[in-house]
Image 1 (cartoon, rainbow, N blue to C red):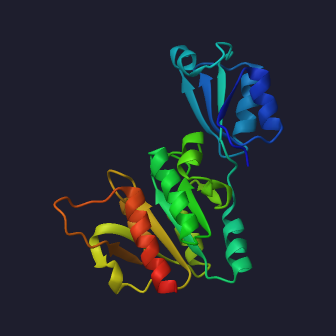
Image 2: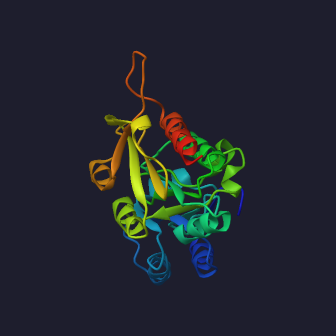
Length: 245
């Protein structure tokens, strides 16, 4: 896994990056560009999960580090993403029922890093994040994970709800953290389980919540009614650890 975030600028450099198999997260292209090299870059980008954004020149100038972007800038992940299959293999290797952490729109890199760290310490076999409207594996995330990013697989998926459905077919069931649910101590959290944590402000989205088998509420006795996303992940994860024994 690589350990620093980087951008690639310029038509030839970006095209070569795609052809070399580098994992490109996002591609910024000058709006209106339609020439041969741009078409080749778009063709390569569409083969993978690259997010493509057409922007104005001012936006490209703003994010460019070299000033020589030629109308194209690619953002590469600081670390390579894993496959969900890698997580099942890790669970099998350890002789454990799969325990996965699914994050529904975490936007703060410090939260994502802290959750990956907690997932590692709690024995989770992997973390799954959505491709859009969520932070990816940046250098800040890596630092906040305190090295856990090197040991805990992180996969990126197009549709979290669809992924939950697919994992249910493999015998997994899902619990999400939400204020309106059953006290977490009263839910059986053993077995092959996926723990879902929602966005810092809005929580778990309706579509994802509907796919979950249980909604777990963390008991709180203070004057405010919510926890930081990474703290909530830690509390619920360790109730799962306690029950798994």
